[in-house]
Amino acid sequence: MSVITEIIDALEIKIEKLFIKSKSLEKKNQDLKIELLKSETIIQTQSKEIEALKAQYETLKIANSLLGSEDNKRDTKLKINSLIREIDYCIAQLSD
Image (tube, helix red, strand yellow):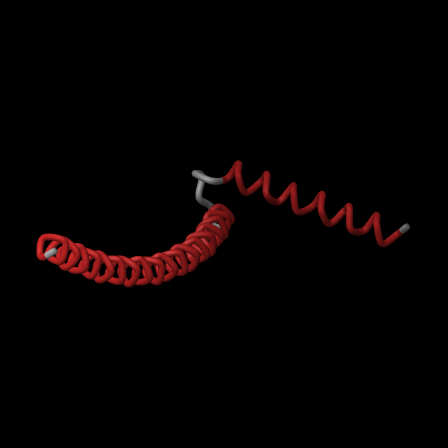
């Protein structure tokens, strides 16, 4: 019977170690989920900042073109024409 008792004791020790390891892994998993959420929030914030900076860049390109820069003159003309078409469309809608 002592052999069976030793086997049972060894199994209990192994089960206890597995239980501790399982708890540790669950804690680590929870920590990683929290870190992932923080990273996703940072990515969303940075994406919004990038979009805002792109819009500012486009505005600056147009302003620079209006000041006489030859580099973006074509883009500026296209943008002005697009704005004029939008205004004409709005006026037509208001007229109806």
